[in-house]
Image (tube, rainbow, N blue to C red; front, side):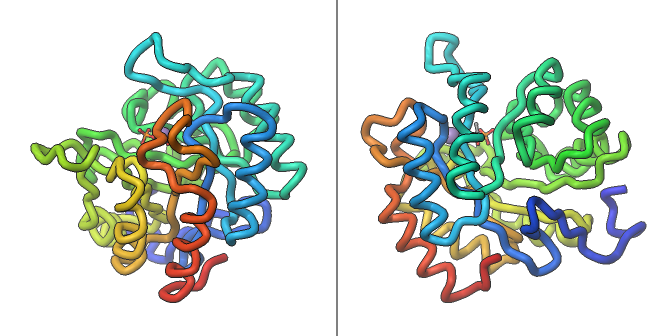
Length: 263
Ligand code: PEP
Ligand code: MN
């Protein structure tokens, strides 16, 4: 179902009147984690004013250490909903367990499957039974073929609203957090009709590299960007070093608007 052979035209995923795919470019921006009401509503207002179409923010966080901040969980989803009420921006947030499907269906606009769960096949099957759009991130050590097969798991269950996301892969290079695989975008476009967005924040791990990688992503045909933005990166509960300030995000949007038309 994900294969271009069976559906040559690009899939356009629609979320709250916004489109991603088929020439429509969507910008998803927000903090790594929801930390509080003022933080998330403030960032939501700022990214909306700069031209973002979607708000991201983790409520359930997949952290390497069990002692790191795990997210505000259900409370985080409520705060995201408040930010949506204030700004109208639809919510993109990660689902880590099938047991949360019901609350995600109620409170969330796009369910994100994180890199660490790309091959959690039971979770993929569960979101495949839902009608909610899914943003499927590439596993950090997964091939393009494996990413597309994971999308197939979701689509096989009847949910064809799948957006793929290239977020960098592990290589021997450790200057950056991951290596952004720009060739994945044209490769996926050759194989599949599904939209592909690029997350330069998790790829680079360095805030100053987000802008050049964003431009490159658009140049190779990405259907959108996912950008981490924080009001106080130095004190962020996670991924501060790769987060843009709202002002930096505004500048990024200015330069992206020079090369692409944003939804
Ligand atoms: C995220 O987007 O917050 C995230 C955890 O990303 P990834 O799954 O790509 O590491
Ligand atoms: Mn993050």
